[in-house]
Amino acid sequence: MAVFRYKLQSVLDIKQKLEEQEKIAFGAAAAKLQEEQELLQRLIIQKAGYDRQAKKLVEGTINILEINACRGAIEVMKTRIRGQMLEVHRAERQLETVRQRLNAVMIERKTYEKLREKRFEEFKQELLQEEKKEVDELVSYTYHQNEG
Image (cartoon, rainbow, N blue to C red; front, side, top):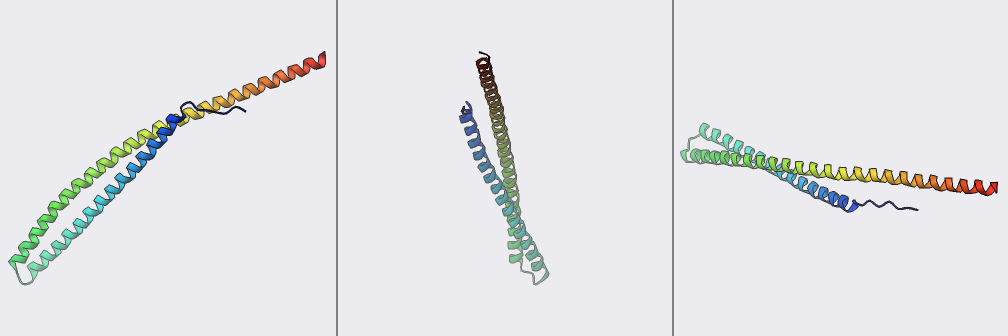
């Protein structure tokens, strides 16, 4: 029995490994984005706490040092939030870059898989042709044996 051998199987295997690596990179980039977004949320919540504290300080007995310290903390939080928004944006761009690389690798792998499938179909057709040829030869041989 004939065995199907795909000449580009090693290339297909490499493409599959590259795709797996890109999937891992995509997962890492997605996790990084999630982490940056969670940090941003925590900073926003922390700033809101400082805002509430500043309102309470103004309502009660006025302590200028505490009010100034709270306002300073609010400004620091605003700066950290802006910086974190930049980090989130950077992580989003990185995720998009990895997504595009993953899509390109997947397209290449699918192309090689389609070529393999096409070649396998051709191989099956060749086998069918060989079988038909053998059957025809057998029928022809049997016919000539019975005639003689």
